[in-house]
Structure formats: C-alpha cells, structure tokens
Length: 338
Image (tube, rainbow, N blue to C red):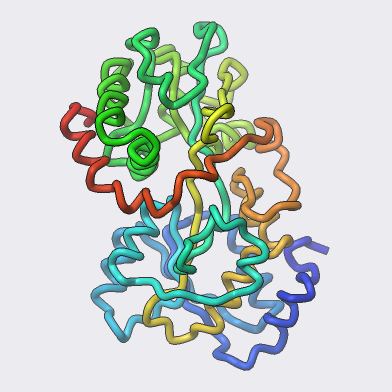
C-alpha cells in the first residue's frame, strides 16, 4: 500500500476520521509540485474532505486574500520561506490555531511561537564549491565575506526572500554594523552580478564562472534525482559545506502553512495541517521534492540522504526574520547588493 494512504497515528486518526465539519478545505498555495497531488488525494480519501487549490505566487495570493476580505474562501495559506509567511502574519492574514498533534510532532523552532503557522519541510541554505578549484572552502556564512574568496562567489539578488531571511539571521546574530560589513564583503567577493535562481548559482560552479555558490539544498538534490541542464552531467565536481556547524548551525528555509484569518472551514483546515505533519504525509511532502522533513523519525529520501544530516540553526528565532526584514533590505541597498 502507498505509505501516504496507510493508517495515521492514533491521535491523528481520531482527529481525521468521520469529521463532523465541512467536507472541503480551500488551499491557497505558492508551492507548485506535482508530487503533492497524490498527497492531497490521500487526504481526501481518508477524510472525505475535498481540497480546492488556488495556486499563484505568494504575494499574489496575499493580495487576493486582502481584496477578498471577510468573504475570502481561503482556509489554508501555504508558501516557502519563513520570510514570506511572516509577511502574511504582518498583514493580518493568519489566525492562531490549537493542535496537540502539531505541537507534539513539530519541534518548536520549526513553528511560530504564537501558533500562526507550522513548518512542513526544510531546506538548508548552504555553501557549495568546486572540488577542483577550492582547496579550503568557507565553513561559515561569515567566511563567505573573507577577502581570500574575492571574485569567487555566486549568489542570488538581494530581492530574493532566501537571502533576505539569511541576512535577517546575520543581523540577529551579529547586529547591524557587522551585518553591513558582511554584506560589503560578499559584494566584494562576487564573481558576477547576482542573476538567476539557486540552480543558476550551481551551474556557475560547473561553468567555471564562480568557484563558490550559496543555494538551498534541494536544488542540488534535484540535480541528483533527475537531469537538470548544465548541472547534472558535472554534479560530481561540486562539493558542499554545512555552514556554522561549530556554532549556531545552518540557516534553514521552511515550507510552511497557516490557517487564514477568515477561514470558513477552520476545523477542516486544522485537519489538513495535522495530516501534513503525520509520518506518512511527511514522507511524501518532503522526500518527493528532495527536502528534509520537519518531523523526526521520517526516513530521508535517497538523494537528500547523499548530502547527509546537519546541525540546523535552532537558536535564531524565526520572528527575527520579520523583525529585521526592512533593515536587511536597507543594508543590501547601501552596499550595492543588487
């Protein structure tokens, strides 16, 4: 039997069997992966609750929810990166929820401390490098700004939410002045102006445009799992370093979801979130997209397992990503990080 159709844990089974609430849930999602289709179908089969999906970019979905106001049909908002879901929180688009299942299953550092959202899968933002050209790769985020790496680093633009959240974590850890110095060092070490997505940073190593790149883990794992032009054929030439393993740990980006403020099907929304953090659903949600699960005990997918385990940054509060968002962008602008 497909593992995602197997029986849920006793607690979750009680919560999801023969629901006494509405038989539909409206999911507004900026996560677009075909691998999630089977997951949602299994949820419907188990609970009888139909999932109606609206998919678009996160900012578009938030604008839509604001325009719909109190009449919004949105029950669950799902997106990638804490920075994005924090924007939904700031705009009053999420409401607190109570769930013993989620509190028991998901570690506290991977969910909001006011229960406005929960993490669903993890992607670490780490350092990649050319095995042939880099003898001593950076071992921390701070090392990336070392003049020893001048002209070697490929990294995305400052408008990218992944980099904004990383910068926010630097500000939280070191303060604004040192964070500005760090950003200046990164700009000085850039091999080329920021361009493209994370896959393009890895392609830059293969092409020789850069020796070092910053990217999320799943982009590399995806290159292992299937053919990615300009990456897969030479992926063995790329090494990786888990940053700050002797300190605060590697910065993590999350796929996350919360219940919409005006959710008409609140109980069904809670049931969906609880299902998504079940052992069975985690195996599909995270592994099918080459991510790390948020629930312990879930086997890691084959290609992610190639990269191994790491120490995540459990100390930097996720609330700081929201707190320092404006300052992060200001610093980027001041140092000329396009």
